[in-house]
Length: 115
Image 1 (cartoon, helix red, strand yellow):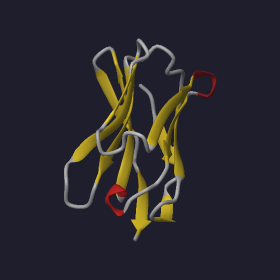
Image 2: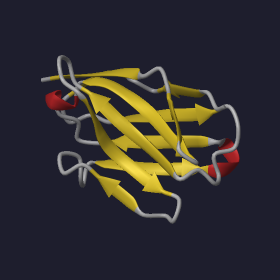
Image 3: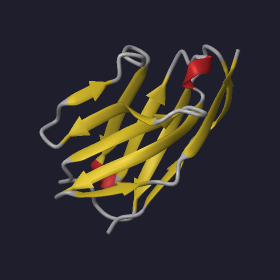
């Protein structure tokens, strides 16, 4: 089992930046996948950024060049740096981990981007 706690959300103007953090209750050094998902109001949850265990990083087309995912193993923390935010980035952001077929989600953190 692992508990995930996100933080860093808030209200920001379009063009601004936020950094989201996801801290795990134990080491996530060897997990298969860490990722951030975005759920816009009234829409399904969608993958924003992911890091695979072999180091491959992938982003949704909508955030490429603006968002950066990173992982700090000693701190058991995954980050999502979000720059040049747009109103369509508004929604709840969830941290996700997959380890040996088990999946874990955080409770989510709200991001609101005003135009």
